[in-house]
Image (tube, rainbow, N blue to C red):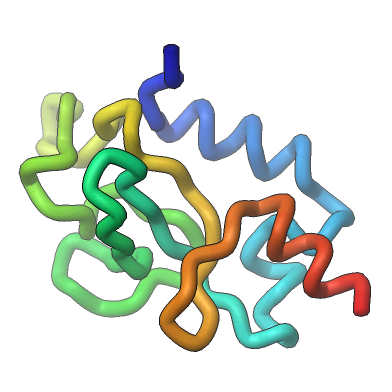
Length: 106
């Protein structure tokens, strides 16, 4: 069963992929922007702040409400449905962290 996407799981992924090109600050030069894929529907979403502005890393607050499972007491998104994974967008296509890291090796 898939794990719910949370701020903690995003932080853990960033630690795991550090130094590989699988994190935002390491793959911008390859044309990647942080984004999300809903594996259930195939919909992709660029990472955005709650106000709709592009976010430079994986931010949950800008995702559509139908993906949100939980918010903290001040209203910030803290959990997203399990079918959503964090990755990257480039030229309209979604890349997993692993795929983005491989692209940055070239």
